[in-house]
Length: 253
Image 1 (cartoon, rainbow, N blue to C red):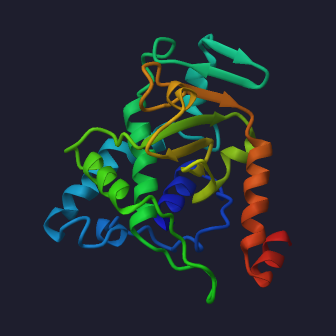
Image 2 (image 1 turned 90 degrees about the horizontal axis):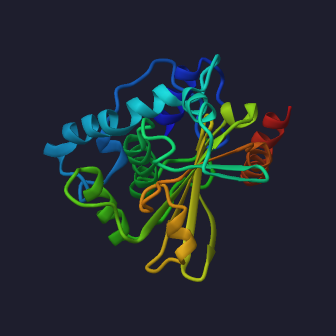
């Protein structure tokens, strides 16, 4: 995850605001897929293939479309088109509205980030801080691994919700996948990256509404657009409360 935050920060040409990762390394390091999974998930002989897949099928495109210092290419493409859905602050674009928007690599990128956060534990930036990891469940993580390697369809136990944020704060923010809430045997995780916000629901059964607005599983493959500043502030406030007092004072200053 340090690498993801660093890549987005360098590509955007700005200091990405993050509370959940260490300080960026002085030099960009090549991606080692072995860091992000135990040997039971990716045999050593297949790790170079995994490296290439994660970059080629997701990260490369996600970086090209994300917020930079001067523009947000994905938002520009969406705002040039009339959305199928408009209500209050929400705008919704389905695949018929935006056939030229490449959804597959964006979904692949998001799921790869959630997977990496589920199969590897990152130490906290603080000496005695809580390690960073989410728990998707062993079977779900394995199903997601197979999907990312190209051997299986997307897991039926997952629904992905994608929001493109229009505000400046979200455009310069990054936070790692975290558990947002759990309700009625449905676990919801989220992460934000420079104007992207992805929400992953994990459950054995879903309400019809959860599937109908899904970025991955619905026939419409919805992309949602709204101002995300309030959500970004809420997320950073929550993350700030989890920081040790010393780091909390440093960030606030």
